[in-house]
Image (cartoon, rainbow, N blue to C red):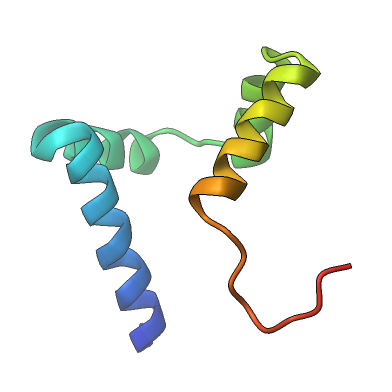
Length: 75
């Protein structure tokens, strides 16, 4: 595992424990490891339950909370 992977894992665990707590974060990880989850299908089902206005509002909110700060040119 490279340093970048370690950083991502650490940040992910911090996010999980902050939002779920220690026990539920461990349960979440266990579920991910135990179940054969198709992430693409999981996301598709999640977004299929939302209307386009809801998705747009969530995207706008995420953009405000986490503005782009990279050096790449936005198209």
